[in-house]
Image (cartoon, rainbow, N blue to C red; front, side):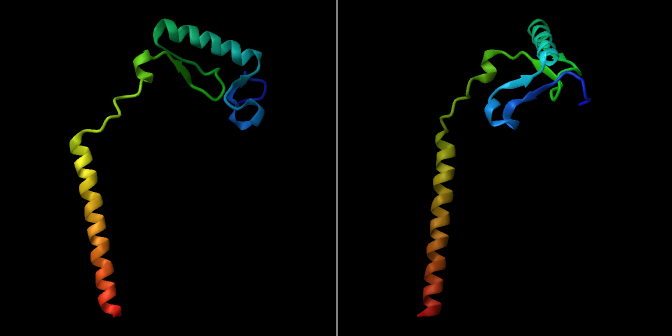
Length: 101
């Protein structure tokens, strides 16, 4: 970013500004304009947004977590893999035990 250009950054670089978007007056005004354009058009790509290339307006369903319940098929595969791993470990322990004793 050039010196004197509008500044807009993620505040994570500074502990006192963590979880904030930070910028100078011009950068924040550019962000406001980009947000308004994104609300109207769904997306706004601009070069005057500092570290960012644009703003997108997404539907609320985008932010909802998908159904996190695993299917019984997925659960069966995990159980089978764990059982296989335990079996191989026991076979390995038995083999090492027969070599040593």
